[in-house]
Image 1: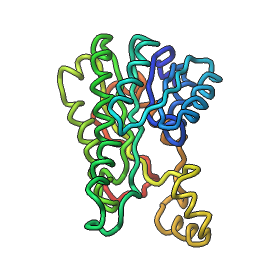
Image 2 (image 1 turned 45 degrees about the horizontal axis):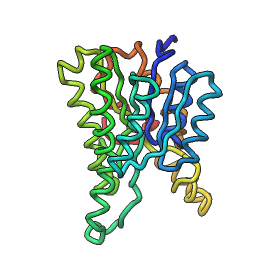
Image 3 (image 1 turned 60 degrees about the horizontal axis):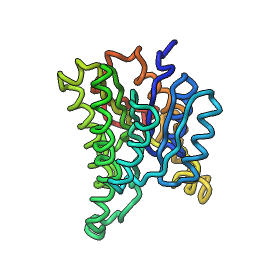
Image 4 (image 1 turned 60 degrees about the vertical axis):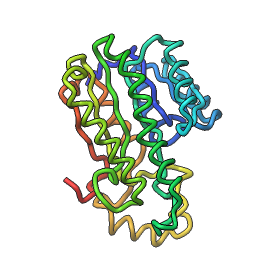
Amino acid sequence: MNLEIKGKYALVTGGGHGIGLAIAKKLAEEGCNVAVCDIDPERAKEAEEEIKKRGVESLGLEADALKKNDIENAFQKVIEKWKTIHILVNNVGGGGRWGSSVVEETDEQVWTDVYEKNALAAIRFTVKAIPFMRSQKWGRVITIASKLGREGGGRPWFNMAKAAEISMMKTLAMNHDLARDGITFNSVAPGAIMILGTGWEKEQKENPDEFKKALDRDFPLGRMGNPEEVASIVAFLVSKEASLVNGACIPADGGESSSF
């Protein structure tokens, strides 16, 4: 299938590792020029080099999603280099393990930080990208949410932030002016994804037998997902083939979630 994104310009936030890096590489394999931003400057530069190996232009930028100025500076550097943006993937986020399982023992700052790192960062990047997408009458905005934005079960500050991201994409998709300017807005809701250096890998190493039992008990496929599987969904959603998909939240969880 020809996704028809060769030569377009994309920005993937939190693109230095995990799902973000997998998305960046997948888009590059389809001929898309890709910028990534990451809080770790070394990871951002390593990602830039990985993307360039795929024969496209790339840009690796340092940016802390909790700092508005970092977001503004990163976006401005993308525009200075390419003059426009066609595809925005709001991947940066996290905080699902922050705070305490005892809600009243969790400081209010956790609630605000998780919301800012997820929903507010997505809002800030999206608002900056829209004018360029409007002017060229084509754009794709994808936000990486979570199955926990579609149902209960996680820590409330994380669920709240991810639900807000899904709601934002759906609401923007219903805006007639944006839709008729050729811009679509969708979200992807991953379930448990095995990413090196994260809490899942730690749990697996500390208690492999219990981890294996949990996989068999809680996951219909008997395994967790991997970043590349999420990246393949994103690649389709940003393509011209997905022109009718607007306002959707696509689960990527192998049947793990209980929501429809």
